[in-house]
Amino acid sequence: MNPLDIRALRLGLKYTQARLGLWVGVHASSVGRWERGRHRPRARHIDRLRELQQHAQSETPGEAETDPVLRRRETASDRGPAKRNAAKRNVAKRNAAKRNELKRSTAKQIATIRAALSARATSASTVEHGDRWELHHGDLFDVVPTLPPAHFDALIVDLPYSSGGLHIGTRQQTTHRKYQGARIQHRRQDFDGDQRDQLSFRTWATDVLRLSYRTLKRSAVFATFIDWRQLAPMILAVQCAGFTLRGIAVWDKSEAARPTPGRFRAQCEYILWGSKGELPGARGVPVLPGVLRSVVRASDKHHLTGKPTAVMRWLAQFVTPGGKILDPCAGSGTTGVGALLEGRAFVGVEQDGHYARVAAARLRAAEQGRVMEAGGRRGSSAGAVEGLQGEAAGGGR
Image (cartoon, rainbow, N blue to C red; front, side, top):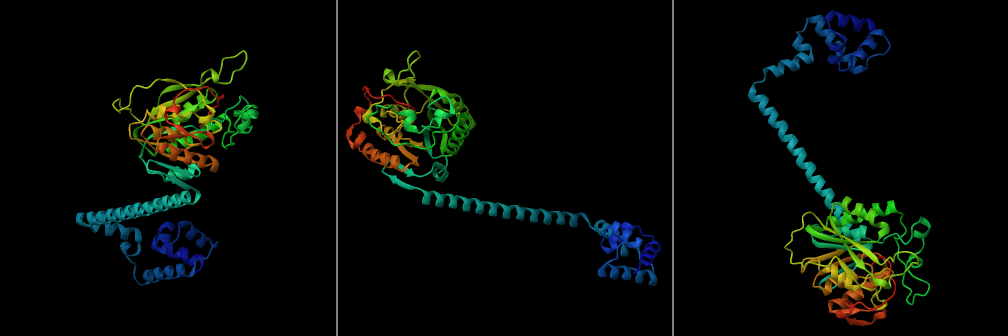
């Protein structure tokens, strides 16, 4: 059909371009281009136009017969309330079926992701365990997501401080240069993750604490070590992770801490503590001192920045008796040793192979009521609580 025939057909039927386009199945602008000769209709459109032309030549069709819009309106007006309600119910059923299918597919996806994470953690880590302890050798970001939610009674963690100096140059030194003196008797293994600046430390610490938050029960407690240089970002990280910060306890390293002429002696490190939500008073836990004075002894220091066993036993007493403690940065396992000696259970994660082996050996000894000293020697558990003169200590596990 040529442009004049299309225009004559439309005017003869007294159709607008939009109405004719609706009948043919195109936009009104396409009908206009046909009539101006700019475009030619396709074969299927020509068939529809000729069909309409035949109807017009034989007899003028009624509006409801030729106009799809009017036909739909008439059909809708003929429906009674019962039919309309039935149609609504059918639509509702189809929507409900779609929602259920979406939920099932989402659940399958979540299960697949969890299985992948579990497989990744299993392949990337090994596990040592005893009756009341479990130690994973692997990256905490692989292992912690596989731990069950709302499972632990406490988080006691000693993240790498990334301090050891006021400027970026000193913070980026190796850990043995930052934390060990030149005349140290026992040179200990370096560890990774202690070279972050203040902003990246806060971001990383927030990620670790938020990841651990999921594994804790409601009203579980937490305690995390820090020194004065990183105290402010750690306070922010604790609250960003969702914990309720309730106070700061102090570990006094005594006058054995390294002195600096003309300045105050840096003999204190700090423990931020609080809970996941509310913290009931009746937890079977005594009133604990807010300051513990305990010297670092060479025989009780198994990590480059290790804490005394007495300090970790002090913190383990903050946990409900018989409770389970999580430490995602286990180091040489001192948190676990303190937990076992105080009648608590322990799960730890350590990425360094050397310190994971040291921690496993110490946890086996502690489960039998013994404290393993440096060099593989064993001492009584009571000896770990006594404050004896020792070497100067930095922060860490």
